[in-house]
Image 1: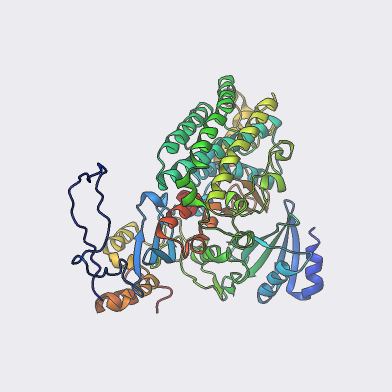
Image 2: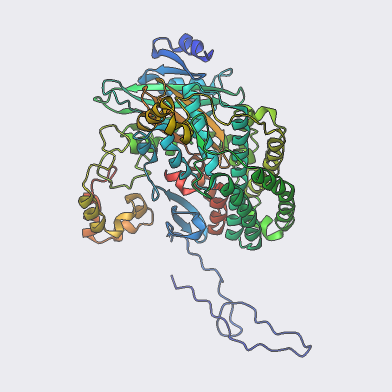
Length: 431
Length: 205
């Protein structure tokens, strides 16, 4: 088989007699008048192996894809994960429950506050603790703020993957506003560690509430702009519609969760169907797609931002006064001033710091609706202050496992779009 | 208690062990040999319809006398009901049980992770190899209780192995074979890959 050579006639730009620019048609070189060769010689049987990652901007982290290509068509995808494996679950077996919370920041690092909440809820269920009304509402605010951050990062990076740079800037500007609020509340932008077993690390200030109200009032404007620039954009629609589609049955069979599952038309949302933190008392809609392709995943995530904004507005309106933490000195550290002056408080302080908070024998599983999907926390206790087993059900790990099914048969450029639509974060995939 | 437990007892009899309630969830212990049949029955029987596999994981207790547990989290999306199935394995015996990948594709990576972290094998899994650790990882299965937190090898040995690793070995045997590249590899590299210089290849040719 001869090598494929495509020769272009080099032409100097010029104008034809009518004054229009001369364009040289793309074609196959050869003597003038000769029958043109086939422009795309058949290359059947010669598959190519392409390695993408682990250091590649379009893989959204240290994901490595080994792709077998027939021309430009993907024949097989073999994802390799684990480059960011940190052994959090093993490490957790050597830590007190409250000491594990900083580890949860680092799993899904695009929604750290929601991870903190998921872990704290599981420990509280294990211990049978009832958290205060103010803490419940603050945790809802934490979860929905995380959802907006995560979806904005997803939208920005995905639009860059598909060649649109402007939405990235708009989305990251909104993320920055949430990050400023998050910093005001927790002192950190990424490693928030905002929850504690039985309460929160810090209460919010009036300035935070004012700032969040301002954000809630102005965020829909940016969403409308994003909607206007993308939803009916011919390039965006062409690159995403009909790409990587999964039917509802396939999505269920692959154990997908979150926007990936809902884009395929399955109306399952943990907040509605297994409510936690009183989500059943908020007025919001479960966003469901129809076709299960990349475009529907985009629409679902965009609309979820609107719904998260609705929940934030309701949570701010109902934010009750009152204590933040449970009134149990075995669980919650006493204030520093009392620990230094009051004997009883000092004993509790000492026992908590040295021995940790003991959980009764048993196990608990709590799933929460994280931006990526259902984040499960499974804890097994043998009665000590450290869990026997801390299992994270990682939503993006399980969603990513459907990538070969979605990408096979599509073009290589579609593989990038499909991989982006999964919304992975490698800190959580590899843990 | 979830009514599926009584239905399971009526259908499978002795294969169903004790049932317990933990934090509002029902846990059923199932005999290892009946796992596939029980799972298929739970998924396909009208009225049960546990069509969604939430998670697969394993638990090893600090008490060495207690058996290893493989835990399956099932959910019926239509009925919004959860059920937790547990299989007990003797850590001194053979750590093998049937794969549920034929029932749920979503179990693919989850079972690979259990294999990687606990050394439990799944019969009938289409592609059982390590997932979070690399293919030639030779220190064992990290989430077992006898595995030390910092690994089995000394830091010096870990560095020595990392420096001595051949770049070609980052492609698995499967990848080298799909592009017919394996046949064109030099003989010494084939030999190195088969021998697994950085450890043993768990699923070589």
